[in-house]
Amino acid sequence: MKSYTEYLTYTTESRRNYINITNKIEEIVRKSKVKEGLCLVNAMHITASVFINDNERGLIDDFDDFLENLAPHEPLTNYRHNRTGEDNGDAHIKRSIMGREVVVAITNGKLDFGPWEQIFYGEFDGRRPKRVLVKIIGE
Image 1 (cartoon, rainbow, N blue to C red):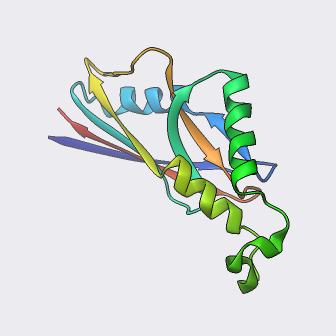
Image 2: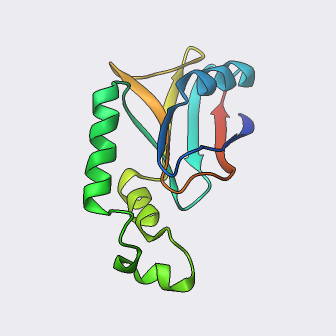
């Protein structure tokens, strides 16, 4: 069995952002030369997420609205975590809801998606570099 690892870094200009990273992950799968296996993609920061969904702008905006309504950034006093000098208590909650990672099967050297599935990087406390791990195992 082979293993291939690559790290991606994202720095968003805004606090919250959603980036379709499917093409980049497909490129990494090709580089790995794995034909049958698994691809793990995970955010390596507690205020960012990797998730799978449809690449439809309205849906992405719906996610953002839902998360902001559920855990609004302000007022900052809403979060005990912010008493530590941080201002990102909401981002931790948003990440917990959207998840840490995805695992996608690799079949015949390609990500084996269902209809409309795409991989997204979700940022909830941006404006600084954050890493995403891509780990591929298989034959």
